Amino acid sequence: MRRIQKDVGSMRQFISRCYHGLKRRYRTLTAPRIDIYKENESRTEKKIGNVRKVSAVIPNYNYERFLNERIDSILFQTYPVSELIILDDCSTDQSVKLIEERIRNNHTGIPMKLIKNESNSGNVFAQWQKAFASATGDYVWIAEADDSCNIHFLETIMKAFDDPEVVISYSESLTMNEHNQLLMKDLREWIDIYQIGKWDQNYVNDGKEEVAETMCINNTLANASSAVFRKGDYFDILERAKSYRLAGDWYTYMCILRLGKIAYCRDSLNYHRMQSKSVTLTTHPEREFDEIVSLQNFAMKYFDITEETKEKIYERRARKRGQLGLQGYHAVDYHSSI
Image 1 (cartoon, one colour):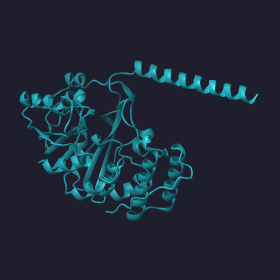
Image 2 (tube, rainbow, N blue to C red):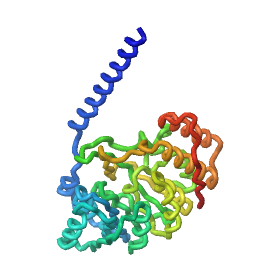
Image 3 (tube, rainbow, N blue to C red):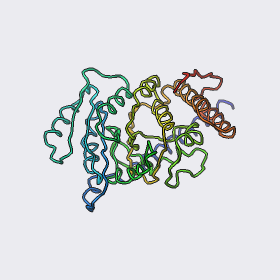
Image 4 (cartoon, rainbow, N blue to C red):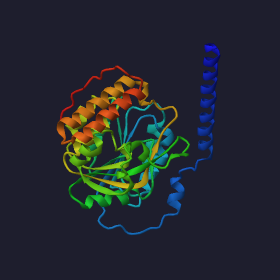
């Protein structure tokens, strides 16, 4: 009897997996496509006053397939960048050839430059260090090579820098797959885990308060491509970020936010690409959990966090432990410092 019940349970699980798999497949097949070229065709030219110097930097490693769209999404901006720098981390595909051809055929008036690594850096934050060091603009946009964006992205989020205390300005992101089919219209479901509604409207917040209120619980700036940074000396911060395999961006944001304010735009102007073959964090559940705990502890040490928010931190930690199947596992704290 128990064997029959077990078999029935297994069959139900199999049918459920098939059903949800087909449902996801149907949603993908019928999902609208994100097309920056149509956006650009329908643009209306208007003069933008007080254009600040923004350096767009594309860190690339083997993203030849998406590079043309990424480059065009930057060159199409209604708010022009002052330069476009592409950092190639010793790609083994035809990325370099494509980039060199784009530079030769660039007639936009926007300077384009390729910086090639002779060997792979092995760490994304080594590329971020190079991005800030090589940028000549007063603002730096690290535009990941496989992402894209709306043509009004910069025009919209650069307005926040009218406030001289803003150090990070970012927009909401939609997600799309490798075929540019829409997966999620925004990331609020991921970010707003306690459904407080904070990200339903635009806001500007003190950076330390942002960490103390929400970013101490989870990384609420989900995709680096969605942010523009006021240029600063972040070399040491990024050097320490290298010790994190999965959450160095979260650490970087918290450190930078000790220096000023953060601005958020609720419109999904950044297009974050989620690829089916990408390596997920749950490939290394212990490491993921260790880094979450480490960064939560870092926030509690260096930011003024209320007891109520600390309870949310511990609740989220317990929930994540269960999601990752790590009951009884004791995390390793990396003892992050400022």
